Length: 277
Image 1: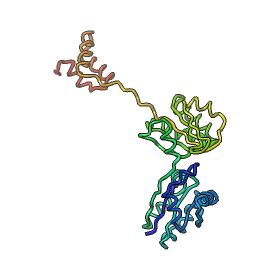
Image 2: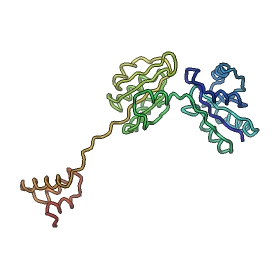
Image 3: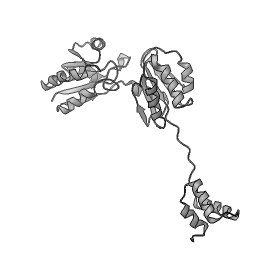
Image 4: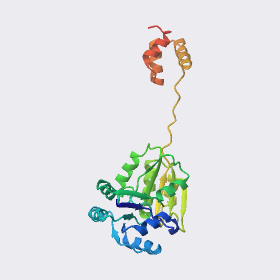
């Protein structure tokens, strides 16, 4: 059975190519690449000469029949993106679905990922996170998305273009709050790799001018709400006794305490009556 391999490639540092990725790229009959010129440079660096087929967001549907035909002939195909793991905020999921439906194998070849590299080095919680790709370009849609995420407890992870970074940070500070923790990871694995950490308000000032390079923005999740523990039975009884001693009727005391605690008024009334109606 022919196989479609999803091959992760370096996000900057060419030393991050895996031995398995090199072997698979050497063995497949065809490489589908987001930008054939960019990927051609990588293949030449690896000493490989392979047929390249462009596959990007504008032509993915049109390329699927060509790739399926190659698989039907028994030829293995590799899908790569310009950098990192293909299909992750890049074209590819329609192809993967079509290959599965046609009865061929799909095999991931893991490797570099800007998402995971930024997350694990950010210092923000990693036990729960939400990857959101590139946020909307228009301000209203961008702020609407952030409002939907206002109560999300997990770390939020975005990709963003340098020119749109100031607008995104301003929206985060406005919608999610100026004190939200923010990390801006830039040029990961490259010579000028940097991690900036601070609050959303500080980020707005720090990146008032768009910085160069490829950027990942991480935002701390919504802070846990502080909740008052439910009162214990002895505490409720003591409060009721105090209210009754102050001249309040059992019905009035039960109604007031129910409103304050959320406990059933009927049960509080019975307690005020000493267990009697």
